[in-house]
Image (tube, rainbow, N blue to C red; front, side):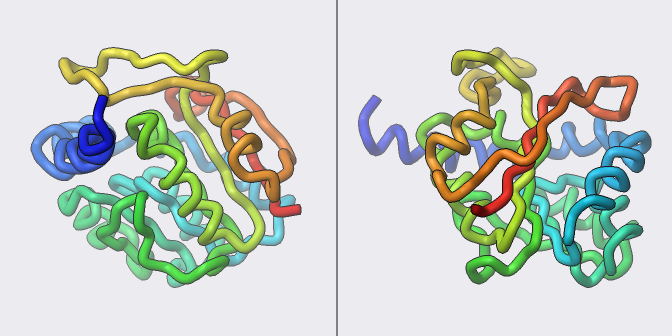
Length: 207
């Protein structure tokens, strides 16, 4: 694959998620966050977090709980699907819903106590993944949380008729490889009976 083709892959996927494909995902996941309260309350109870940013927030399945635990004005979510962002603005009063690419977050360095993704990095092509991860680290003052599908080795998985749209790997190990300033604090697994989609999660803290 040429360098221009590598560069086009992130843009292609952003266009995919911002259009009808992303709209369909939003419709399927309107109630996705119903069972996630326990995780967020238990996680944040042990952390010094007052501000948070979710990259790829969709309709706010996680933001809804963060807005109950933190002040809504200190909770931010970014996405490339305008319909999903409109849903956040409509249902989560005071929460900041911002149109932005994961590859170029419109925030200053270390603005948030916590930055995170859940089920988002899996949808970024390998060529664009380090850039998005670097943005999450750049915007975090202290913690970075990653919740994604796990595979011991990088692998692409066909996804709803699309190729190049879902990738699994050991995201935790990749964060530590790329960003030596991070230290692993905790990790775990969240199953479907807990309101998630069988994701492995890692919590990192700046050294």
